[in-house]
Amino acid sequence: MKSIKILGTGCDKCETLAARAREAAENLGQDFEIEKVSKVAEIMAYGVMLTPALVVDGEVKAVGKVPSVAEIMGMLT
Image (cartoon, rainbow, N blue to C red; front, side, top):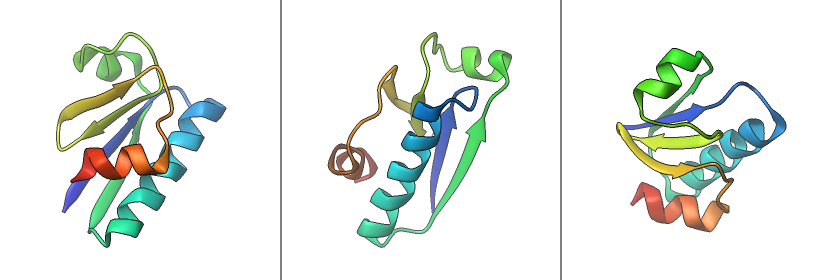
């Protein structure tokens, strides 16, 4: 199962990133769990200073932008 974390304070971009990550995982037919992380201390623990950010299986994949569904699919494989 893929662990996907969306780091951000709940802004529109964070919500868009979560929706795209969900769509990408579903398109790949992967089991996944999406967690939204909004506490600043937890976000900074990943070394992230810009949000939104995408973390897959503990590895930061994107920071400060909202990748396309296709780009996220590449990050999940």
